[in-house]
Each structure stands twice: as C-alpha cells, then as structure tokens.
Length: 112
Length: 113
Image (cartoon, rainbow over all chains, first blue to last red; front, top):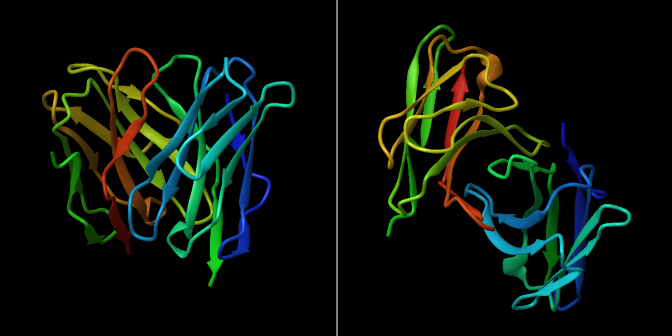
C-alpha cells in the first residue's frame, strides 16, 4: 500500500524566518497532494494542494514544491509567525481517487 | 455553514462498553471518512463511505462498524471497546470528482479504561 513519511518530526524556527517542511511519498502513481495544518485540539485544516502535473504552487505565504523524480514534497512558509506553530501533515491521494494517506506529521514551533 | 460536526467531544468508556460517534456535514459532500489519530502517528483510515448507501474498510477497521445514515450523517460504532481504541477520532467529508480536499471535524477524544 501507499505510505507517506516526513523527514523531521520537529522543527523550531525564529519568528520571521522561513520554514521548510519535507515529506516523502512512495506511490509514483499518486496524482494529488495536500498539506494540512493541525493546531492543538483541532482537526486538520487545508493549507495548499498540488497536482502531479505541477512542480510548484504558491499561496499566501506558503509554497509547495513537488519533485516527482525523488517522490518528495516540501512546504515552505515565508516569514513564519507564532500562529504558524502547529503540526503539519502531507497527504497523498491513493490510486482509487477517494482515499488519502497521511504522513506522521512535523511539529513546527515558532520562537518569538 | 457549520462544516463537519462531531459528537461527543470527549468520552471515557470502560472496556467492553459500546458507543457510537456521530458525524454530520452540511456541505452536500458525497464522501465521508472516519480516521483515528494516535500520538506520533498520522491519521489512519478506519472506514469510509464513497456515497450514500456504500461503506468500505480502510486501513484499521477491526473493532469498528459504520453506518451511512443519509447523505449528511456517518456514524462510527464501537461494539465492545478496548484500551487499544483509545485515540482521537476525526470525521471528514469530501466532494467527489476532480481534485478536492477533505474537510475535517474537530475530533472526539476517546479514552477506554
């Protein structure tokens, strides 16, 4: 089956710095990927997505990069703020098209 | 729109007790999902329902049953709770067709003693 993994379980950054969170996926046939943010005590919230026919997608202060050659995703957060402190998950859409597989998450702590 | 709602928010059970977790969505989504989240682990799919009237097993279905009551509601039942089912349970819904995200509820924190 598919599996999604994250390289770093925790990440601490200074407020104002840029953050990069990485994710590896195993199924080269996956066609859609999502990054979610989960704050303490809440459900995951959508941040940004990318389709497999794209290499890069930008949102407000966030950018997702997709490298299909090495099956790697990254989430870049510009000018990280204390409100960005959360656990970030990548999710990979399975071959059936109606299931997602989630990584274990990276906990981001922003130091004021 | 309330999005995805879940009840209860917290529950403590004794081993062997049964309970049903409720989930409802008001976004007219076809697909609904139940996940569990354990410390240090990602979300694992228990069951899902691609459309009203259908349900399918996910990665970790043992010990659970589900009912897709109608398009809005998808319940998860623990018939005989075990300590290994102590977890946070999330319900999600998703529109089908194309590229769509899953919307998550706030979760139910379940402890089985």
